[in-house]
Amino acid sequence: MSIIIKNLTHIYHPSTPLETVALKDISLQTEKGQWLSIVGHTGSGKSTLAQHLNALIVPEKGEVVVENMVARSGSSDLRKIRHLVGLVFQYPEQQLFAETVFEEVAFAPRNWGVPEDELQGVVERSLLEVGLSLDFLDRNPFQLSGGEKRRIALASVLAADPAYVVLDEPTAGLDATGRKELVRLLLAQKDKGRGIVFVTHDLEIALMASDSILVLEGGREVVQGPPKRIVEELSQRPVRGLCLPQVLELAVTLNQKNWSVPLTWEHKRLFKAIQKKVNAL
Amino acid sequence: MAPKIVCSLQDVVFSYPEANSSALDRVCLEVREGEWLALLGSNGSGKSTLAKHLNALLLPSQGACFVYGMDTRDETKLWDIRSHVAMVFQNPDNQIVGTVVEDDTAFGPENMGLPPEEIRRRVDWALSVTGLSHKAQNPTYSLSGGEKQRLAVAGALALDPPCLVLDEPTAMLDPQGRRDLLDILKNLHEQGRTIIYITHRLEETVFCDRAFVLKDGTVRWNGAITELFSLTQKLDEWGLETPPFVELWQMLVAEQLIPEGTPATVYGVQKALCQLL
Image 1 (cartoon, one colour):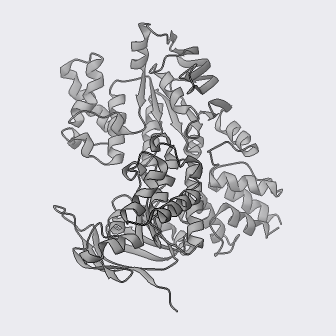
Image 2: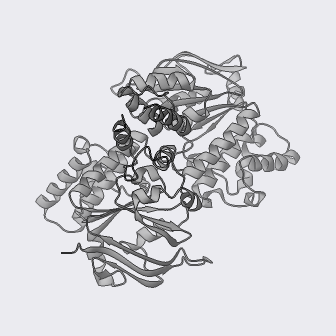
Image 3: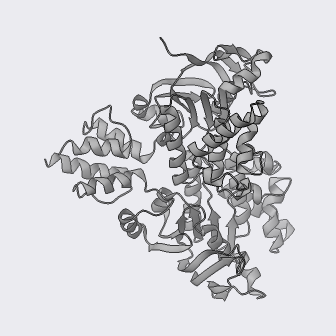
């Protein structure tokens, strides 16, 4: 059970003066119960890639296969793919539309044929899953805070019970507490067996939470693999628009001065290595 | 000569209509010319409310707020106050009014009724400081998020204000955009401008001289940045999460591996550590 992308290339406005290559020869694979992060600068093609995952964009060159179904325009599988893969937009305002939280969250499951008498239960469960109380049911989603809106957007995607959840820069504008809370919620969803695809420019979160990371630059793959592999590669060469977590940056600069400390983004680990090094003097 | 007082809040209380509690409760604050002040606090702590007092977008319910010696309640001084203190908001889309980059930047000085050659000079200067000169003729919608935020700063700079207030200006930016913006502010600060920087990210305050922490509308801390970084438990209590790097800095200081005054930057820590070898 997996999402497989093979040699995907996407060109906006082909054969016009505005022609832009958004993605060039991208391949990846991720499974249910896995956390894949797609990391890159603004304009690196990560949102375009995210929109391919649930067939909002159908590939023109290359292949997207979700649970053995190939995304092809006109195919009857497209609807199934969109049911299996839920997409949470970057700005909840682009996604929310209903007058009450209940209507908002009930929209997708109703669309996928959940009977009316079960809807209440599905909506309530989804709200609780994103850490919101049932007091929110009758409130207007547009009058909630930024963090709450984001949770509603996530709840409305979870309500359709997707196998994969794709989130496009879900932490932009959230404060530290909000970011931490969101990561915690998503890890719980991962433990339930959902696949998480997390699109971000925050390398720190990606390193902490991911099983695997794809780094993009200008629509091309820079490196792909588990966090350890990413750290090795990114300490060798900078990637446009990305900054190493400061702890890792310190480890890299210390090693340039022959400290030979581990390349880590965990502050406790680096602290111990530094302490050991100094004590040995 | 003692530096000028840019703004002075004296026991300011502010309540939003229909709210049960005050958003600001007896807040006192003095900012001196040339300072870079970090105004810190978690969501809902009252920091944006305070910021809006600094250019008379909000007026105190009780107490008083003076900007360059002018009482913000004095309506005849409104324009004068706003030409001294310019504001940059969190979301640049709320601030951009023009359809072309240089027209947007010219909006403020045009409103002030400046002569055309002075407007031209200010727009060129503001765009070059913010690194947008090459985009002067571009439509504003075509800019990236980072460029839009820099345009918002350019628009404020074109007013040539001695004091800039920025309300979480990096919230929508990627790490590179964030660094670029901080570099711009560092230059402006070195040129003698007063900067009041609102954020909940401790790692963005390393260049600031002084921190001012709000929680539930009251002042909890007012002092030097490096001192603030050592208050591990307090930071938690105020809802300010300590970034991993600052935690590492705290541990290194606590174990006396680096001196207390070491700047909490990668370069600062690395330099202090290498002196041990």
